[in-house]
Image (cartoon, rainbow, N blue to C red; front, side, top):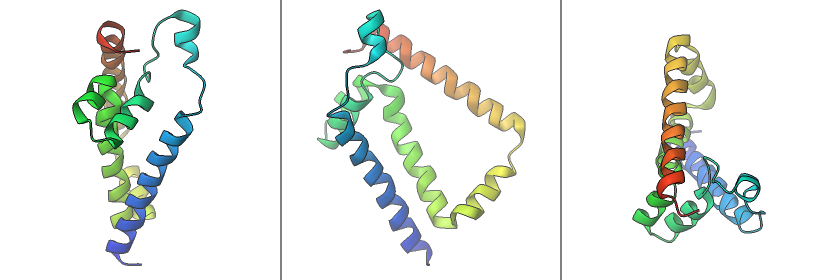
Length: 126
């Protein structure tokens, strides 16, 4: 399979996942954390963010959940890279990363998610 075909399949799979996530969110119950504690969970607004993004309301999507707004194109880039070079080659490259690199990624992700949650608690539309 050529690189172009793999890229098309990878992006198509990502898009199918986005549409499936959006479709499932239409029938999902409300957030349990919001119902029980009256505060949003760190992912609150991500379904509405995806809905706004699919409608072309980019600013509204960002304001609903900034972390997941940034995470969407990052995940698309990762899927595209894996599709371009092939899944096994992509995993081999990731295996070469040091444990310190993975730890830094974990810290940055956790900090970004915490900042997102603080934003949602103070300014979110939950």
